[in-house]
Image 1 (spheres, rainbow, N blue to C red):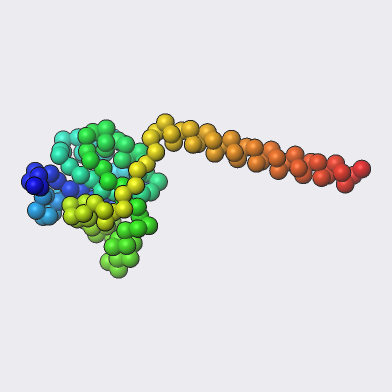
Image 2 (cartoon, rainbow, N blue to C red; image 1 turned 180 degrees about the vertical axis):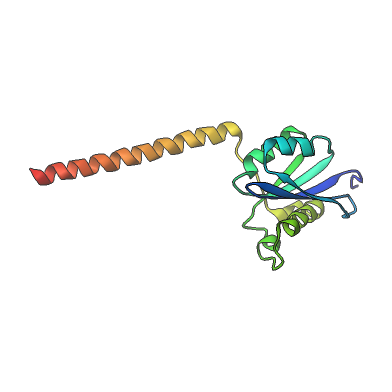
Length: 155
């Protein structure tokens, strides 16, 4: 039995602004809007809206945006952008159209979005430390190797 009060939002995320399309349970467009891609804007816009499912594609901003929305109690689906052919291969591509397609896919069948799960904030920090360490070790090894070779040549 489908919840007739649940709303479905598709969010096409941009660096500065994000397009949002909201559908009701029957699939009718309730609202199309654009908000700033900031934490404050997300909280202001989505706080009073529930129950809601929000679909967004993977991207640079999707980890923090999905965490912020989940903290507000919103169900978040992060779509694997490489596997959502309906959006990637769409000839009439625009942010508004993409937002609507994401909302419609979230309303119909979540498997069509090939959902992914982002790492937690803590795991993301640990991964950043490990990657930084790896880069530093590679750099130091590379430098010491060339210093070693130069030392051998001059001898």
